[in-house]
Length: 530
Image (tube, rainbow, N blue to C red; front, side, top):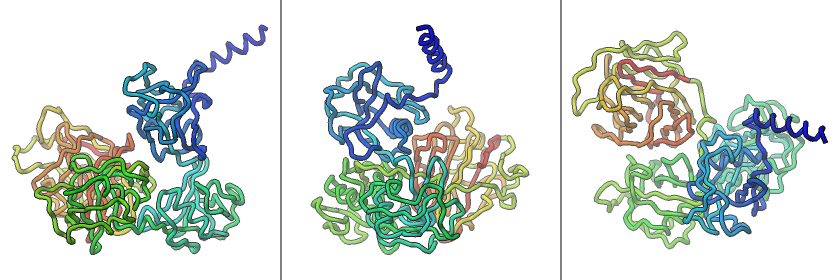
């Protein structure tokens, strides 16, 4: 008896000093054939129940997926999409996780019944699985060299036995449609990563590559440089959704005459949205958006107007509409879509080191010896002008790009007193600029895409994006830790909150020359390049 008591006391003491220890039996997934998807069940004090989907989001799903050993979240659906569980009322609600917690029960939540929660409001998740897959070095997010992550380590896939069935599983897992072609000659470049999978033999109906038969993790039977690749039909789509950080919701953009443009929201409805979601392999549509502030207004031409789909078409290009380039919108009002599936994009896959180029710096800036820190000396502010916002200096990054996908990350010093309007003392600009952009020594006007600059700015308490000359757009999301993603071929410049891993804003562009990281600082400000 005393032995059992001592054991119990030791266990209690261990739990008190191990706040990060996770009891995975307290959270599990049910109602789905995929062990890494389903309705979320939580057990508290011996009783098990569901979670109300009120405020349920991807941060909450990230904790669940990690806790049950299923990788990263793909979607965080509500509405009992996997079927209502046996209990008649959700057990907890108002779950609010930051995404970093080791256990769902370490997040804040409410155990008080909510009047807005009922039987068919169970929260669910869909996770990537214990191992992840990605495509790199391709022309789109759905094309490239196949890389997998196992036990936190990324590696390549050998081409021995690589065929149509293997490639189809990758396309399905990434929500990229069907196989357009599969490569087995390192056509997407030779990986410097270790070979983690060899002799992959899928049947073709698996939901994830890690479910396929293979020789064994880390068993390398591959000749050097023989990396598997795939191109999926999703990469060839001429329609996309942008400015949400999720490929399955955002502003609708279409490609015509090799140029991206938008869709006027005249007559835009759920039937049109349904076709777009199906075309992108994003499930059914949950809403058709016609309000610009949700996903921003595009700066490209308006290619489509008066779209009238029946909802049964395979492509938005099969729907009745006005002639190409005709715009019936009296003001800029672009269409948007929210689909029920989620495919969140992780830009950090393409991360490269960022360093300043001292040769491009304005005279007032100070560059550290390792080129990782840029600062502007504190000087007297210039007189304010209503049509001119000035900074004390700009500098370009040392590496320009004219192909591929790239991600840089940096942090900038916070602005001054938030009650102060735009002055050099509380202003900085981060983004990318064309190689030919002109910079004035000792200060520069905040430029727009028309000038070859795609950037976000902080002035006082607000984050802004320059859309066109002389105009600024409030983005409503603040961050001093910014990630900048560039897809040169697709013409995308996206900004992320690097700390929260949240999407902020996306510009669409047509690049005609190399683009470089672009940093401007007001006096007294400092940027750390990562």
